Length: 135
Image 1 (tube, rainbow, N blue to C red):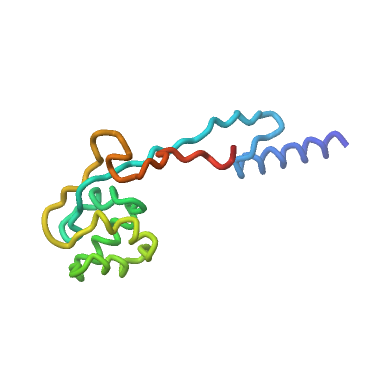
Image 2 (spheres, rainbow, N blue to C red; image 1 turned 60 degrees about the horizontal axis):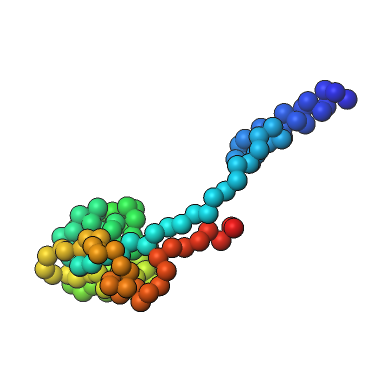
């Protein structure tokens, strides 16, 4: 009987470790609330000349999507900003987020806004923090 208990305990510990669950020995640390500050941008980005790092500054665009934009652009330079939706991973919702910052001609001037006040950058007084829904 003692051997069966040890086998079951060992299996439980292995499963808990593999799935990231706290085992019977480990106690889960209390979670602190998670807040994500909204980055306010100003300026525009030329999607025909921007680097992957510059493209990744756009809301909802990460390194993978930025690389997809570069690969697409190498074969088909953008004639209109809306053509960005031809890139895998950019649909109507994501395009609506980036549209105010995107152009196909001119200089890239996109950068984080200075001044700090979200109202000044057009956020309309909305809170710039998102609470973690798990709490």
